[in-house]
Length: 355
Image 1 (cartoon, rainbow, N blue to C red):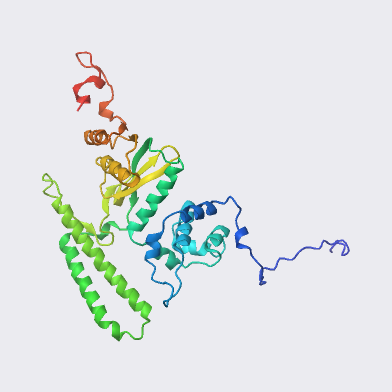
Image 2: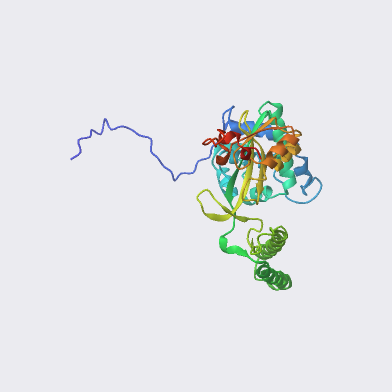
């Protein structure tokens, strides 16, 4: 038996999530004045985006759909990366409900195809964009190049170990791929029951597979031409899905198809000043190229560079000296002082410590 008095029962606002609501939204007030998205939009607005605008085919006086502003796409991607988001589909999804993404695209929404297609543009435009950002950061004092650090990290390639093939096998697959492309070109007109988009997608996939196989054959030929004389048993192999990937040892002791990502960081504010993916499994020869990339990107060499023992070798020391850079590297275990020899010299002063 209920003891609640009907007269004193509280009146509550009902929750009805099935209702449709129409409301006015002031886009400018979706995010606060000091939100990071505003800073990114302002930064991108100060960049020279002429490379992107020049590639737009939709112009005044001609037919065609309006193109999404490159400033919007670049800002969306930069903000997404700052949030740890790298999927075009996820960025498009957040443009539907998350205030910062809604503010950047002004509630217009952007499809994942547009986002992904923009990101896969020619590398030259992205390199130019990266250089401009570094120049702004340098002008603001966030990058000084007084001291930089260099280190490598392995990232897994988009390839499985079972995709690696010898040259003969790759050439056989390449011939099959070429035959498939030719057949699809001939049969395209007869496939009236399929939509034009599906036909185009199938042709594109076939051409991409042919392109990957051609790149794999070239990579195998390059590896064979560069093999060491003392490795007569060496057999070059390349992946049919990710031709440039090489099998490398990872931090867990295993071997997987990977790239060796070289990261140079300015120590003033921890800003990345150079990034490059290499196919070398070790960092032994990577210091000199990193210094050259830094000079090419920022117009000068750093004052000092700090790297671990994988970079510490005679060639690296000479390369840094030639560039006028002070090199700080960690000592190898075999170089560290140990027990004294018969003459009373410690390991730090033996001739073997000065190669």
